Image 1 (cartoon, rainbow, N blue to C red):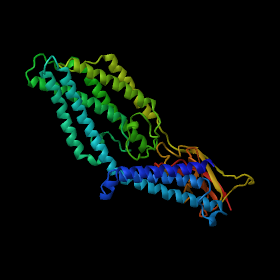
Image 2 (spheres, rainbow, N blue to C red; image 1 turned 30 degrees about the vertical axis):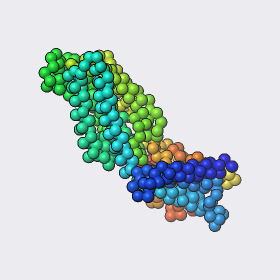
Image 3 (cartoon, rainbow, N blue to C red; image 1 turned 135 degrees about the horizontal axis):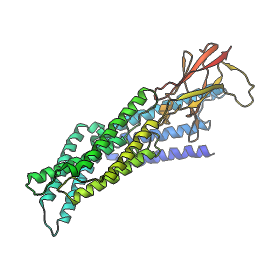
Image 4 (cartoon, rainbow, N blue to C red; image 1 turned 60 degrees about the vertical axis):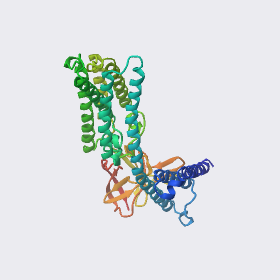
Amino acid sequence: MGASAGTSTDREVGGAVAVQEARQCGADQDGGGCPHCEGSGHRRAVAAFLARRDELATGHGVPAALAHSPVASRQWVSDELAQSARTVTARGREAGAARHGRVHRATLAAVWGAVLALLLGQALTAVGTGWTGTRTAALGAALLPALALTAAARLHRDRGGVLAPLVGEDRRLSTSRTVAACWLLLCVFAVLQLSLRLAGGAPGVDLGLRRGAGLLVVFALVSGVAVTARLIVSLRIAARRLQKVPADRPRPADLLCDDDGHACLTDVQYVLVSAALLLLSAVRLARTPDRLPELPWALVLLLAVSAAGYLAGKCAEGGRPKVFSVVRAREAGDLDAPIRTGDDIEIRGSGFVPPGAAGPDPLTRLVVRIGPVHAHVPLVPVPGGFANPTDTALTVPLPADVEPGRVEVSVVTAAGVETNRVTIDVVD
């Protein structure tokens, strides 16, 4: 009863979303150029997949000719869900170009919105005191990077515009790159402001290294963290110590979460400490625009400790998938017996579903290597998710092509990493 209600709800939600989006962009759809059409198609495909999954989980929709064979019906359900998952993935790719265009426009609006906010702030604070050369220098120091970012965003508009350098190879926003980019913008703004004041002949401009040493060390530190984090991830992937499954698209939550979308303490503390020091530096630069902002060495050390924790988290995350044991899957009422061809085997271990691979399409890429045969793991739906496969156990039928005798079994995850091999005995 609950699963049927959930299926009906998913269908109603999918239909309501489609109707609402069709009303919002009906005129554009007639012309075939609506930027929301691809996104709405993807959302409808997701809603249809959820409804189909929950429907099959209750046993409805399975052909009557297959109902007498649990193995055949399970394989049919798995193939049906796999095909639906591929449809969802295809719709997601179609929505990618439109999504990048929206991100490109949104980021440019944010950049020029910040310049406009600075202009309004300068104009409001100039009431009574008049416009000064410092205000002109600050506005010019904001305009020059904004123009450069606009030009760069136009060149990379198909990859997200301004955000393109901040997206990693796994299509997620990189925390270390974003922090380094924020400090880079602050440093560029400070140097440009001092340069424009010097060009305007302003007296008392201090470019001494003593005051800016803390800022220089911080920028070197966060830049080094960005490079080191990328190196750590690359080396651990190459050593098969870390599994990386590409995301559908970058999200703001990537800055604070792991690949599974759960809040990550090491990322959160690094972002918070960096943001606090960045705000302090900006305030000091606003109060003393004639010199680089001076950062206390105690706060520089605090950021160094935070960065060390962030890199330690990068070294500790993930792990290689492992198979602990392989046993014959036993149904209720079955007698204990050795493994024979056609039996279901249950593989127990860890890391079979890496972070970010819990979606239906990555699950369809999970393969069990049984001797010379590669068997795809069937998807077994339950209301709200899948009973098979899971991160610690998966069940797969022993193919008929497997010869009796001693056979090695291993698992190949969606990230392409193969586990250790466990030997089992298959009897005739």
